[in-house]
Length: 201
Image (tube, rainbow, N blue to C red):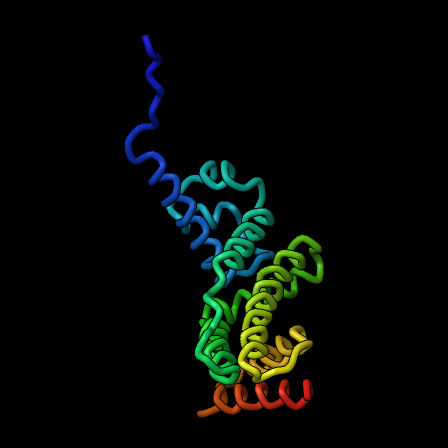
């Protein structure tokens, strides 16, 4: 007789995925509401509508939970802009980044996590991956396409390009917490494309 494989109860896997998603969403909400320092597993579980055991089955501490959420966010990423021009690609990237940075939840979470990163090498490394490495990969692809189109010469500094694209936006939105003037993203995209071309030349 052949052995019959044991099957999980119908819907069990879906329920686990739904709980994990609810917990991750609760992490963002808790970070925005109380910050990393005051955030607790109890508060996350309560907000997610699950028991503490459900959280501890997946992560052994709030630090590992936040690291996982930040890393997962980085892995999602976004498609590399491909508008046909460097200026258009930069403009699209700026639009997406500005919307993300201006989201009320992001406005609370990012400064708090950056402060925690100064005290925790693990958080610093996770943020570096989430906020830098993924963006650098995207910028490398954008610059590579611009080189192929003849807009930029070989050897364009990808890290400088990333600094030029994200630096002014981060300064305006996160540091100064100011509104973006009308047409600012268009002007910034044009300035970045011109600066990269002029420096490379």
